[in-house]
Amino acid sequence: MPGTLPEGTPAGTAQQEPDGYRARFEATLNAAVDGLIIIDQWGSIEVFNRAAERIFGYRAAEVIGRNVKMLMPDPWQREHDQYLRNYMRTGVPKIIGIGREAQGLRKDGTVFPLDIAVGEARGERRQFVGIVRDISWRKQVEAAIRAREAELRLIIDNAPAGIFMADGLCRIRTVNPEFCRLCGRAQEDLLGIQFADIVSAEDRGIVDEMRQAAQRAGDPGTRDVRIRRPDGGLTPCSLHCSYTVQDEEPLFVAQVLDRTPELMMEQQVREQRERLAHVGRLSTMGEMASGIAHEITQPLTAIATYAQAARRMLARGVQGTQDIEEALEQIARQAERAGDIIQRLRGFMRREEVRSELVDINEQLRAVIRFADVDLRHHYTRVELALAPKLPPVQGDSVQVQQVALNFVRNAIDAMADAPPAQRVVEIRSARGPDETIEFSVADRGPGICPADVERLFVPFFTTKAHGMGLGLSISSSIVAAFGGRLWYSEHEGGGAEFHVSLPIALPVEHA
Ligand SMILES: Nc1ncnc2c1ncn2[C@@H]1O[C@H](COP(=O)(O)OP(=O)(O)O)[C@@H](O)[C@H]1O
Ligand SMILES: [Mg+2]
Image (spheres, rainbow, N blue to C red):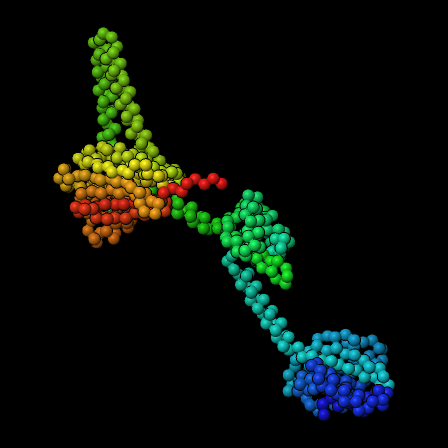
């Protein structure tokens, strides 16, 4: 019978209320969740309650009277007699009065972790009471939590993003290796400091705003900040943070992404686009070279002619200086004209950073016509202009906008080279487009483009010309895209080609 009271139950109590006491004691014993084992001073088991039966897999009858060490795996089993003897002799307890973790041995031979507390009853006989709790489940849960923690740690440590957690005062509590790398600092130099302290001074306001927004709404979005490294450099980062309360403690969890590669890539793309645009301008210049040479030759020839005339007048000894003055005046004017042409060329060919400026489309279209003037005249080509007045400016680079329009005009001239001169008309239009855009287009009355070629127009190096580079349209479309615009082709009524560009109207200047 489980929980059977041994013969040696303290007699005093039992005598006063023998039946009631025994019944209550047994009920209590058997109701206990924890295993309860009472042994005598030699280790012999006297009481073994239901919970103990459940824990060890023995019936009470199987263990009562046997040595308690049968419930222990080695080394406890081997050493238990010795423990008891030592304690009886010296009175120095190893376990008595102290709870601790140990291991139990079940009937089926399995070993399991247990918590054990031992107390001593010093009545007429010495007895020891052990309260035992199977902690396998707790151990499993602990192990699972540890495994989960290790897993999370693995994820965090290998995350491509820098991660840190900070307390309510924004003091860093946990970091991962990527965050350390971004900061150029060791983990121990980061723990305990405030995140704002390693952010560039100008960006501290952002961190503060994010902290407040996170505390208020939970999601302050993603912002760009620069982290100050000990080597004096700055790491450009995008910062995302969230806020929670864990165990009543405020907690910030932040992710920090290194933007250096992204920015380097952007820079490279920008540089490449600029180089390409420059190549495109050179190529357009090449196409126009004979026209330009002609244009510059004209004032130079005029200068030479006026200079000779003036010399002749001086040789003849003309009366008064008026004629000579006039010749000199002409020379100065023609020199200026040649200078203007070269100036325009230099402006067009300049290889500077792309500028983002307010661009008046009409002004650029007029500049392109001035520029292409000789070329147009050379090819007996007329221009019809239909510019909508008072267009708001777009955001872009004026030279690049000219480059796009000039290539359209050059292509139109080429397309109509074989057409009868009366038909050689380039129509240039500008207007407001839908959704806050400005559109301009260049149309011709040439043969147009066959459907198979339309698809390849914007492919680099696609050309149908003997000396074409095939870069004009592909460069133009990347220029337009860089300013958030669109470039497309349509058939012009009457069969010619028409190229369109749409650019967003510049936003009004913000007053910060
Ligand atoms: N207005 C046009 N009419 C007919 N074909 C055109 C026109 N504009 C462009 N194309 C076609 O598109 C090709 C590519 O033009 P582009 O990129 O400017 O390079 P390229 O002028 O050096 O050939 C041209 O070779 C031509 O076949
Ligand atoms: Mg071209």
